[in-house]
Amino acid sequence: MMVLRREDKNHEYRRKYDCSSVKGYFFAGERCVPEIHKWWINHTKANKGEIIKDQSFNDVTEVKDSRGHSVDHWWQTESGSPITGICIGTSKDPREIAPVRFGSAGIPLAGVDLRVLKIHEDDEEEGKNTTMEEAKVGEAGNIVIKLPLPPGFMSDLYNNKKRYFESYFKRFDGYYDTGDVGYVDEEGYVYIMSRDDDIINVAAHRLSTSALEEVVMKEKSIAEVCVVPKPDEIKGSVPMVFGVLNNGVSGKDVLAEVKRNISKLVREQVGAIANVKADNVVYVPRLPKTRSGKILRKMVRTMVSEAAKPNGSVGECPVATPPTIDDAAIKDEIWDVICKHYRNVAPKL
Image (cartoon, helix red, strand yellow):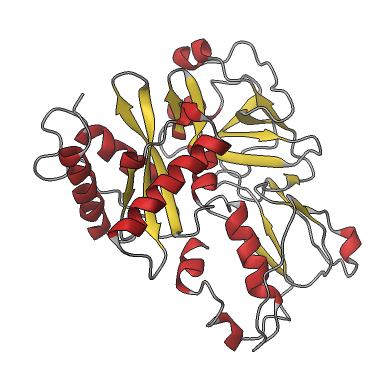
């Protein structure tokens, strides 16, 4: 979705085609941030050849037309089918379709007993949650699903029953561990924020990379973004932003201003604790992704961690190339940017 907006931001290519017969668009893979979702609605609602007028949105948008309805939804390879979403079905009346809440992956589908459990640091270290305390409305926590429905058709890991149990069932007794962190709002809508290993611990404050990326995407010059933790000798970790610029954004002064804007946006909308300094915002030509379009955050995170070590930003990248990467050349592009950052800006740990 981010790539589509970068390549056809003003809908010039889209206007050549008639999408009026499409009943629904379902987003999957990466979480669809609100700015992208709103752009997509504007992008697809107009008729062929029509000049598209951007409409404004609240956080919740009521369905006014059952055609071309676009919703984010959430599932996993392990689940075999969607876990949350907005059902369209055979509905002809848009009033029968639940409203979309931007940033949400919808509501739990029939039969899914989804809970959000509080995160306790001591339990995390021991690898087992002993309290099973549910989080409050709007409070981020570990997303789990009560057995026996999940995880769908996945009955084992190949030749590794021990890992199967430890990965999905050990931490939360009686529940399937999705490995995702998120929250549920007052209307029961589910928000999937990040994988539990994509949480940045900044001075004992847990920050979701997805929440940070959502804010960064409000900077109009940014087409795509990936946020990972960067080791910091005082705070433990601080966010490091990898941004892909929209076509036509250039100039030393402009790029410096974009970095300052990102720092300001995060400070105002997340808080000063996030500590996204302009120096920790870097530009890359593209982001590493799997063949299905998911950003390889773990690879980027590991590269930053390796470069932070003494003499870490010297020589070839020590991080293995993931077998699922779409274009292996991107890894070297990212590594060069990280090394340059550490040589010019960042102190070694």
